Image (cartoon, rainbow, N blue to C red; front, top):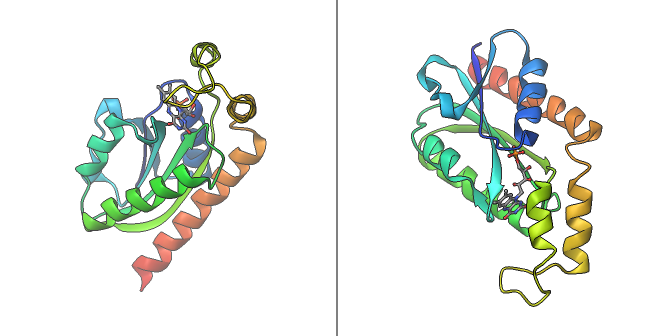
Amino acid sequence: MKTLVAYSSITGNTKKIAEVITQAIGEGAHLEDILQKPETDLYDLIILGFWIDRARVNQDMAEFMSQIKDKYLAFFFTQVGWPYGPTAKRIIAQTSQKLVESNNILLGDFHCQGRMNPAIIKMARRLPVTHPRGGYSLARAALLAESQLHPDLEDLKLAGEFAGKVVAKYRSQISN
Ligand SMILES: Cc1cc2nc3c(=O)[nH]c(=O)nc-3n(C[C@H](O)[C@H](O)[C@H](O)COP(=O)(O)O)c2cc1C
């Protein structure tokens, strides 16, 4: 089984998860940044990893993803938002729908928090609580502080388990 783990990452959180997933799969797994334009047709299974930019799949990954058709696929992402919060749930639903509409077979998804770039936190601290794009409230401060601890060991463990489940699902699909 040839697996591509294709990721998009600016500050390294998503790359860290992608590395764990690649290691967990082991033989036949290939890790590549989407900026290197990996050749998706060479793989049986593709696992896409991306970071969230302004409540959406980042643009590079959105474009890369839109070109994938007729594949066994899974995806994961990192974000500062709380796991299974409204943004995460919407992203899972919308991404799943898009991938299935392109005739892909979806085998799972995973997400966890990822450390926000400290330079951006510094800028956010200057925003008033009433700022239209969400100011620096106590709730936001708590979220950003928690994000600094991720991905943590538990996130990495869950990412490895996710990889195992995706591979098991792929194997059961192709044996049917
Ligand atoms: C410009 C920018 C916008 C972001 N927007 C969001 C967002 O809307 N929601 C969210 O939960 N996280 C947001 N984040 C946080 C990143 O998604 C998060 O830190 C992620 O783990 C970064 O991944 P990377 O280290 O692989 O680049 C944003 C980060 C940046 C730099």
